[in-house]
Image (cartoon, rainbow, N blue to C red; front, side):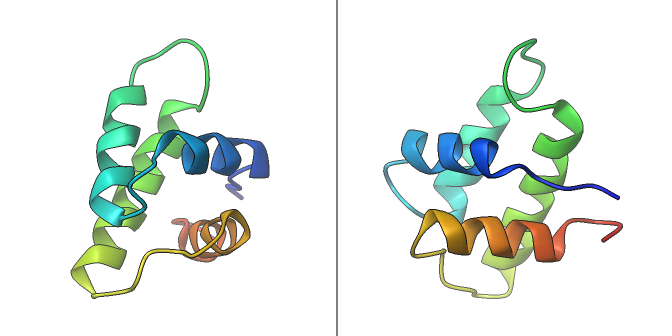
Length: 78
């Protein structure tokens, strides 16, 4: 079962100063294919979740913890 570690969420939160689903998606796109950092499979899952949240009109998370909860609640296969 897939799980996104809090460390990865914290890194994304800090490196996405404009807290929005679109900004998070762009940040994640820039991480795809890198040998260090977040695994590509998790990047793909988080991009999918970000698109779904934006499409449904969900407000962006207001904290690292809330982003962690949202991502792990919606990760495919969970």
